[in-house]
Amino acid sequence: MKSAGKERMVESECAPASGRKQMFTGSARKLRDTAADWHNLMLKWERLGDEGSAAATRIVNLSVSKRAEKDVDITAEDDTSFVNERSGSHAELDKDLQDGCNELMNILEKMAHIVFKMEKISSSVKGVCALEKFQQEQGRSSVSPLFQTWPVTRFDEVSSKLYESYKQELALKQTIVKEIAHTSDPDLLLVYLSSWLHQPYIEDNTKLLLESLLLETMHRTL
Amino acid sequence: MSTCALSSLHHALKRSFEVLEQTQERWNGALSACSPLLVSLGNLGEQMRALQRAPLERTPMRAFPDLRPRLRFKLLQAADALVGKLLEQTSVLQSLRDMMSNQAAAVFQLYAQHADALELSSCLRRSATCPSVADMMGWLQDAERYYHNEFLKRKVLLETLRPNDVSDLQTSPKRWESLTNQRGDDCITGEARRASRPASCQPMLRCGTLSPSRVSHPFRDIVQGGVLQRVLVSIV
Image (cartoon, rainbow over all chains, first blue to last red; front, side, top):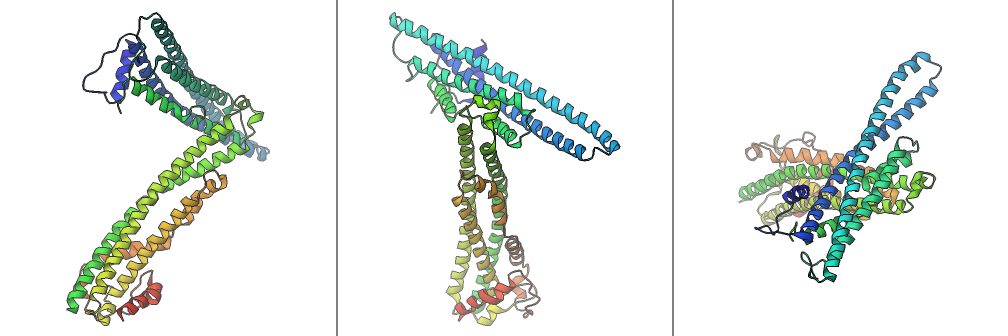
């Protein structure tokens, strides 16, 4: 029921394959729903990535401002009234920084949840593949492709590849979140922001894999 | 015969300056669209520089040994995409340059067709509200040259830009900015407005000539020097 809902979500974005909707059952239905899940999870990931990028940039900007204010205080530490006046501004900056970090942590948590779901669907595809293979060996299922051209093992390969990319990217983002508010090196800060934004472990072929998966499962048409 | 030829030349010139005015607006629009792309390109240069210098091995990022080449690849890819978008914008500039070039060519062709029928004095006559045919043809040629040069400068900058050269990327916004010929831009805007809107251009043509000092246009030096001479030579 849940997957069917998601399928509707992906189909509202993709053009229907033809005027009439084909009905799928069994493993084909399961794999088709999985393809829709991949599409929707990757979309959610992108959205969270953008939100996280904005939060991370804010954190970096606040850290830089905080350090700049500290430097001003060091040079003016003899002037007590000036330092008192600045302490209020420090507290405000600290609060903003804490808020920014909390926001980024929340986003990361949601991203981790997405990767958890990806792991689940990847293992479920593995299960479907094992079942199909077993049924083919028993002669209860035909060797012909479930949809158009892909053998059933291809779905497992694609799911595993997608999951590995996102798992690695999540690990990188977790490290960035741990470090970003405690780093003073401007080059490192820029590399953290850049890494968050450009997602080096999500290669371009992940999009290609997803599109081919959607095409194979007839969510998309040529 | 001479009046008829002069009238058709005036009509063609007026139309050309109207086109020039529209071209200038579209030209500025295309340049404005390039500015944020150039800023992004400069930012990518900064990111690449930071990636080169960041001591990743001394941080928890060492758990990702292939991060540097992977991120570098992503940054290069982003830079390539931006350069592609900028080249798309320069193709808009190219089409505008070609349009102005065709306009100028058409006017000069018309002049060449009627050259025998046109009197030199009528081509050089200015009035309080309307510049002479020679002036306007000179301005049109200046405008054509301006777009040609501006387009080429930008095209060369983008063609020679190496996305894998960090300093090249970092300095690209400033170099692009330095190409802006503000004086030329003001001249084009001023001239297009002046020449395309002489409301009573035709009747006023015969109201006598104006002293050169009153005809204040930014290309005055050029018009009085090279371009006007060239027009005169072609008349002779």
